[in-house]
Image (tube, one colour):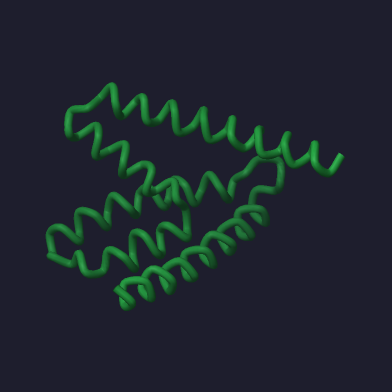
Length: 125
């Protein structure tokens, strides 16, 4: 258990650093008019999650999962975990549940952010 937590912590630190550096690079390349860094890590992280899940399954390398998926990709972008959840539901044949999960996750998460903004702004107003 302790070793797993350390794997997740190390992977998370590396992933978060990669996210920061990707954001800096994309801002430098593309400017600040659009969240290119976030878009890039979400797409790249989701792609890497797909690659890692298949590679780990084919090479029985699941002992690396805490470091690579939860740690590194979780620190890089949680969107990759979300994408894997959607793919799992879809591949199980739970199409309605998969699309419902997408809709609720996106809409409720954005609504929760706005609620947090409004609540906090009212406290500091």
